[in-house]
Image (tube, rainbow, N blue to C red; front, side, top):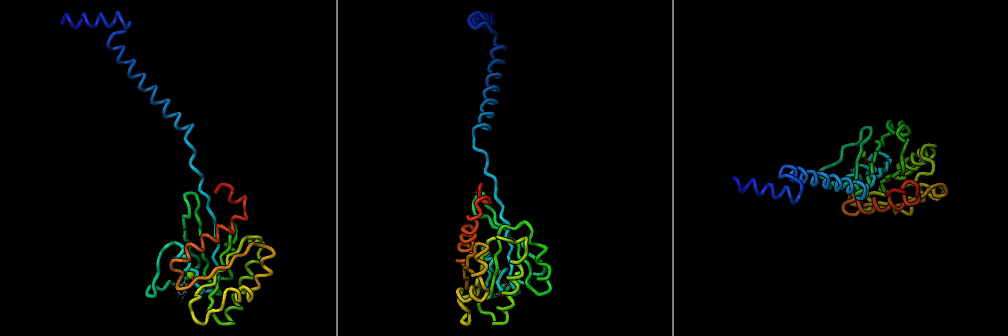
Length: 230
Ligand SMILES: Nc1nc2c(ncn2[C@@H]2O[C@H](COP(=O)(O)OP(=O)(O)O)[C@@H](O)[C@H]2O)c(=O)[nH]1
Ligand SMILES: [Mg+2]
């Protein structure tokens, strides 16, 4: 006991502090060190990059292949047994392309009754995807062209890039993307906005996701201010 007291006296003499004070100092040092480290991490680690959300309107007549295309782009494989139900009203699909980029697709139903209301959903969009059934009849192609011209004439969509998707290319009666481009009068459209045309077949398996996302990014690249933080 006497030895312990002697040890304590000796420590106090050399350090100027008793054991209790030394312990308290050590705890304070650890707390201070931890606080400083945490605040440095906050200040010096890079801020998380803001996610850019792109709003995409997906249009086309009923049966053109819009829902099927979006399923393929989202990586949801569909088979002949899983026929998509006709879109009543609208449907959404979200696809994360990179860590900081999200494509929000909004498909509007293509039946005549729903087409009357398309323009209610035009606001705040960055790009239009228009799907055409390459194997449809002359009559349906004409109707599709009229619906496209009507929607592109809306002031809310002025100047927005257009991606035309020619679906069902594997069907023997399908006409080529070049012919569809001509039938829909895209030459005129190209004067006022960026236009890209891609084709899909066999319900877009494998190729659709890559080609659709890549072409959308290329089209948006022209809209530099939108992509500033991508
Ligand atoms: N042969 C073939 N059929 C397709 C293709 N894409 C879609 N379809 C079919 O076309 C029909 C309409 O497709 P859907 O995606 O519902 O069209 P939406 O009304 O435009 O959404 C369905 O029977 C699909 O299976 C394709 O690339 N090839
Ligand atoms: Mg649909």
